Length: 311
Image (cartoon, rainbow, N blue to C red):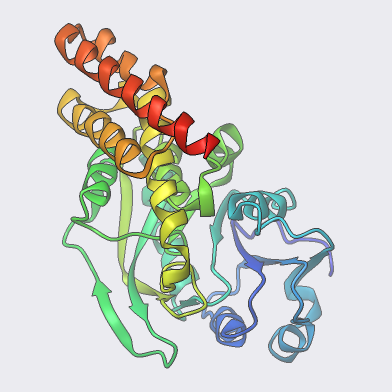
């Protein structure tokens, strides 16, 4: 690869492991009407060599390819994202799934909206997206009527299933990522939502409707497979725990009270090891009765968890 062109403001990062739909992903990147981006492909010790596909559609000078011998995505996908991002020098980046597809004007629309983003100190751009199946048939189309959204509003709406979101349809400011990094949640399920919320740093999220990201829902994807249902449930539990222990001050009391109640309910139902620190939220907000009630409940939950661990 030749030295980078620093006029490129955007990096497209593909953490590669599955080859099933990878060629369609690469073809969509190669088809961009605006070529002012740098592509980084990080091979997470995949058993399927993608080089022939890459070389078929891309010129040597248009990408960086890294082959890693240790698989990190199996431990946590966010670790693999971060490993590839260590190489990125551009100001903005997208993490594109190895089975997802971007419309040909994706990069063009990024540049069309860049001045607006920079003038308003915006560090997250979100694009409209679709869910597609193995045959590229649209399952659901998501295009919302707002042009921007507050980070707290985005997160609460996503948490309440009022909107849909995934990682691929977002572009982030690199310096915000370096400051915060990704939360390491099981399967990285919810890590993307926290990233969108946190990387925005309280400023609006710019929503771009004129370009579409197609997100693959298939039997081989975490989103589409039933094999990960238990791990997804555990991830939702961990997400709530992070919200309570690290980010509760960023949300209103009504939302956080709901999160705490659900955290306790889920830990009781699934016999997860709930933390006492989670209910300190009630003390911080002088909800003494709620704290005492939660204290009794969490004691019971921990007793169940210990019995389960010993059995």
